[in-house]
Length: 532
Image (cartoon, rainbow, N blue to C red; front, side, top):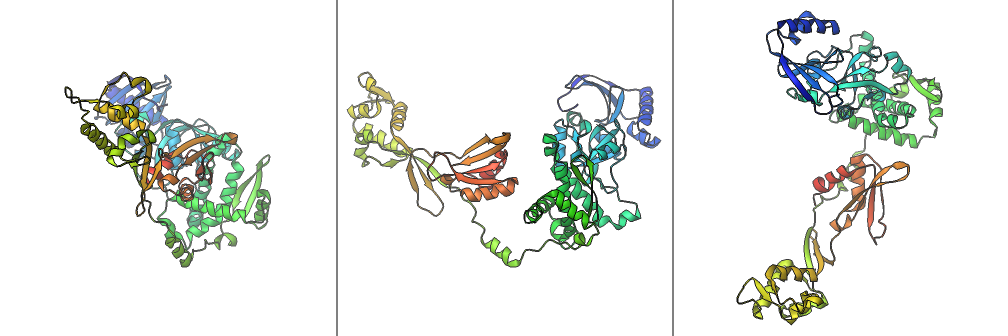
């Protein structure tokens, strides 16, 4: 409700009576807080202000401000903590975990969908429909959002973690947060597991649940579009399980330097390639085979949807799997085949002398088809006017037009009416009558001169079948950029498919097509990585 600017009605400082009443309300609403914690949250001596606000939808909100930060807000007679308060008391509310990329959607006003949740080792917190909950990000227990549960924990699990999970009320970076000191969330380490059994399986269960949560995150957008991606989420969870063991084993040191998202991307790509070479093409048959080997347990929780309900992480097939190390020879070949860094060409605009202008330029030794720079043309015209005594004696800013100048720069209907022209008009008309050209010089190569104007790199966002968007790039060759190299870079950068095809209507020219809207990635490539 705070995604847009707030309208402030009035502000008021509270007395001791109101402070005691607020402490009583906080104690009733949040019984887990002790007396000292309540007194610390609602101080007795520090200034405490109450601010009446109106949200962008017209909701009347009462905000309690202490120490310059909003600590609580009241909406429809219900009291809620702000993220500033939850950073001091992270265990005040039951907390659910999601992925950092989801935060941007929450700040924009979206509710949290269940596919975006990360399943912790101990399971989801037990809540009922309508309970107030906190939302944190993976790796940091500091809450970044506050919402109301749209269903109970049991209903969440029964639904297969599909649908809307939480109605978000307030987030980090929204306008209520901006009314405070705008500090960032503190770094609060996740809680350690107390159970002895969980401690024994810490190396496997903790990472495995993270992998399962990551797969749910990857299907968040697809879930919202068609609601039929639950099985795909399970597929990815299963396919990534063996990869997880390898990250715990020999390759632990190599993955420490990468973010969790980068590790998941690499694992997903390898699992996909392995699946393409697998003799089992149907997922249901593959799941049955894995169940026969007692690696997983599959149940049909809803009609037509098979769900993985259990995984034996200690199965020999999983514990013995490792990612093969790349050979030093292949690494040497890859390093030796890297292309040289790109250096943009030097592009210079030129002008070509047409047949109609040869009389004006022949005195300076230039003929039809000669290429000249703008400064050279200016010098030639000035010298021609001075040599033929065409500068007006009464006004040095005017040039008299002789028959050659008349034929070269005047229109037919002007030849008997225009007798003199200012210098700037004379030079402008002369440049307009010349043919445009340009010179491109690549580092270490001879200059290339061509007639016409150089075509800029054309970036177009187009729609294809099923309302899918693609980004099309043309005219890369004119700037020394290889379309195939650009396609390879964008494929890795955007994590999207790319194709190189002949550009329609252009001879010997190629275009690069990237799946999705990748204009910002092209901006990074053309202005940052390969600055033009």
